[in-house]
Length: 214
Image (cartoon, rainbow, N blue to C red; front, side, top):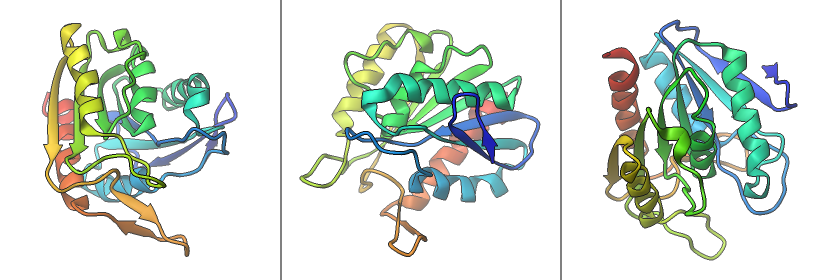
């Protein structure tokens, strides 16, 4: 565990030298202390053994809220600097998608992968210029009372805005998938959501294509 210059924390898995994959969690409206998100944690646990050439870093924000999106971006940028890789890919889940896009201007960043990413219409997408954007989104993702979600049409609109700027990319809809890949049980363990293995297989494929097959 590394304490970042901003006060956030970075947890690393693996010690591959090919590239770093920096992962950002989701957030909420209410100001709350950062945590280790279940979706990102579940994915890293499965991807790191498959991809030993890579180093995975998970960011624990100081405050996990879109009302402090600028703080979350600062935390992500601090994690990129702390890892110091020559090549970096950013993975952002939900609100972390907006964080990853905003932090993509860092010199070492080559691509952004959004997992059910929140890409609000007001978000500046110019940091993606010269990088690739990949979006993976569940077809059943939606907001319900008491249940967080990001409808696929929201990320699709953001993706098309990026394409209009000349950003290369891929948009992949996962039939039957909901918002997220895993949740944390009351006992602390991780519980996979529907289509979880499909998420990990697709992300594995994209990481190989973007970082290892070039």
